[in-house]
Amino acid sequence: MPGTGKAAMVPVMSAPSASPRTIFDRQRLAERRARLASGPENDPFFLLDRAGEDLLDRLSVITRQFPLAVDLATPDARLAEALAAHPAIGTMLRLAPKGRADGVAIADEEWLPLAPQSVDAVFSALALQAVNDLPGALVQIRRALKPDGLFLGALIGGNTLKELRGVLLEADAERGGAAMRVAPFIDVRDFGQLLQRAGFALPVTDVDTLTVRYDSLFHLVRDLRAMGANAPLGNSGPPLSRTTALRAAALYAERHGDADGRLRATVEIVSFSGWAPHESQQKPLRPGSARMRLADALNTSEIGAGDKAGR
Image (cartoon, rainbow, N blue to C red):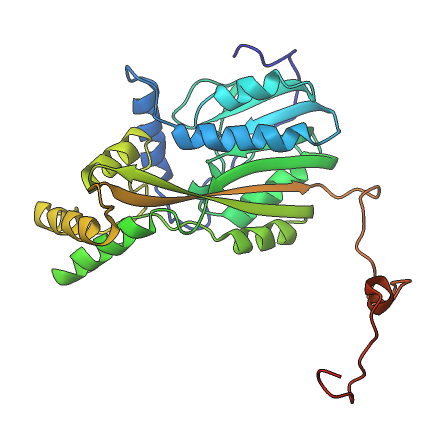
């Protein structure tokens, strides 16, 4: 792809035969990506633009150089191209997701095809939320990084499409059943804990909550389809009937409509960073090792356990 720097040889590893558990239908997701890639128009990845701009902003305040970096499965190549032009990046490799052919290789986010300690940075935007074994993927990313290597990116957060999820569940339940039709997304706090469990040092997570407005529920669904994001679940239940869809649309308009008739949809983008451990990194102080009392720092008097409140 253009602008990815000089060629680099990176040791690769073979993929396993199957994922340990199935929440998302990865084959269906790849097929949708392939259809979008061959279509006459680009995907309406306005959320990807937002996430990419934030990632580049975060990278700009890091005073480090990354000789060899990887874009892991970001839905299209624009982020990799922008990173390739960034002064902190030497060689930029794009591992495109299955269904796309705009990278130096095709990679499955569930199995990172890189040898241990082979790259200086891994970037990924709005891809990891559709991984079946997210803890395992994070461990693989950390192992692929050289010591003090950077993992920086974004994924879709837990409250995304909460309005759509609610009305679909209610409309289904009114007709005698319920199905999971909106993918589950991870909470920002849970993701921070997963970074720690995967062995990342200095993990940081943040959430950007957006409100996107649509003319109707059907316009929202059209956008989801255009992004290849509509119900990539392994078992989403029976097809949505016309009657149930119309009932869900009525509930959506009733509960989440604005005065001008447009409907609100919540989207959370969880941004994150973590580092492969290295001895040069800042370490937290041991409990009890502080050299100054908090009361001295605040220029106040301490109140003992037996003193009266308000004294």
